[in-house]
Length: 110
Image (tube, rainbow, N blue to C red; front, side, top):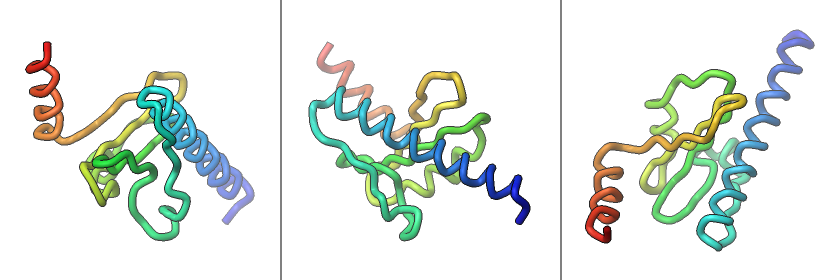
């Protein structure tokens, strides 16, 4: 591995950790409950953040690609991917059926 590849790997890891902390802070502020990163997930496999019943995979990238693989990573609950490109806003990706359930509940109360 070259020094350039090693530096790029460290930068990607730092960007990912920063994104996970950012999402935890946003979720905690939105729902008024503590939300923490799953620190062992890199070693053990699985998702980055749990907000029951959701298993959240967080991606912070310069470019967005690989959504189906990221959904597959979010195991242990209703899979959700929260992703943000550099300089862009956060987006939420989830399965259509799960979104319909949330939308149906929202529409019923409005």
